[in-house]
Length: 272
Ligand SMILES: C[S@@+](CC[C@H](N)C(=O)[O-])C[C@H]1O[C@@H](n2cnc3c(N)ncnc32)[C@H](O)[C@@H]1O
Image (cartoon, rainbow, N blue to C red; front, side, top):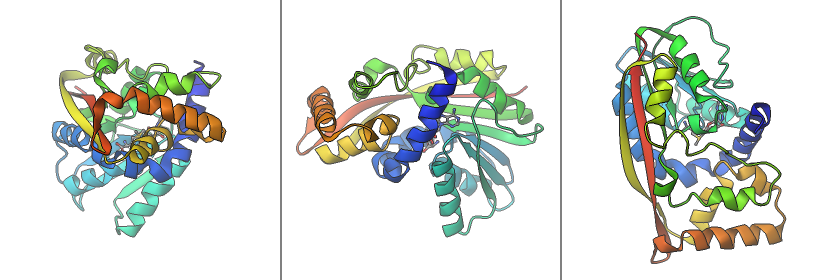
């Protein structure tokens, strides 16, 4: 896929997903985000850069860790995500978090001023994740820390059929390399290729709980990466993709809802 097209699909797709994102994914992503935050180990007073920050689910937890003397700069390619994070920061009276629209591969930031850099569930969407990790690392002070979480291997993510089901109805694939970084040692290799040292990784198996069919469908189609394609489907196509997706997760049915297996990979390293 042409990288410029991929960035546009992501930018406008996540603009569409913003209203359903936290409802669909907040609880599901929490275990991966917690492991990621543990592995980053942000300390009081630190300056932290976050890439692909979305609505700020992780940013606000980093703010709790760094305290009033520390700060967070959150960046995301989606203007709507950045606006949502700014709004939430204002509502919560948080003044030491700043949110800017920026492509992960070109952050438009100067200097090596951050103590730590973090990216939660964003690198799978970036055309060149090594470039994005390098961009994060270059913004770190010497000895600064870097951590990222991605989805794991396709075979361990029970909701993975969402991509072929959607891709069959659009001109170009929505997320061609989605499971690449979560396969084998790819995330650690990418950290090394970006110049990071002291690399550690952990793999985490989870269950994604959805209390009803509607909740599972809303998270998959409206709150995530296929939201742009889905928004353009007519009603008949929406009904067809719903039926195919529910069929693909039928093994995970529990009472009225679903317990879908998922997997994450989390890596941490340093800028030596
Ligand atoms: C699953 S959300 C994760 C948001 C947040 N980090 C969290 O954990 O809740 C993925 C985010 O990646 C962002 N994204 C996708 N491609 C990007 C790119 N090339 N540069 C920066 N952000 C990107 C999307 O806009 C979206 O907000």
